Image 1 (tube, one colour):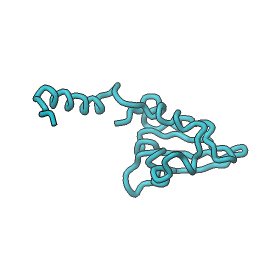
Image 2 (cartoon, rainbow, N blue to C red):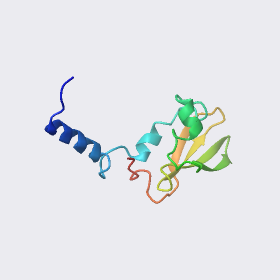
Image 3 (cartoon, rainbow, N blue to C red):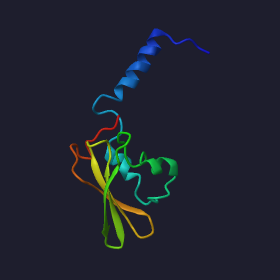
Image 4 (tube, rainbow, N blue to C red):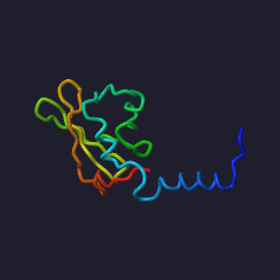
Length: 116
């Protein structure tokens, strides 16, 4: 195994630190865009979905889903995305397919809500 040099350790630390710098990392809207046309209750990773970690990141003991409403033939689910910073909702049709999402006005808008 190669030894890590001081330079390579520094580069690694810089890379890891960049995730906490504004402008680096994914935005919440980019992540939520990937949910469209997938199943809501049985997505690709059911274990993550069951804990809410697929759709949200909240503190232990807090709920990620804060409201549901019937809408047309489907249901709209209101979700706290990153604790209280970002909020959005998903419209899920009668076949359990996520058809759309919208920003629900958390402290940060979904397009500027940088995830760390």
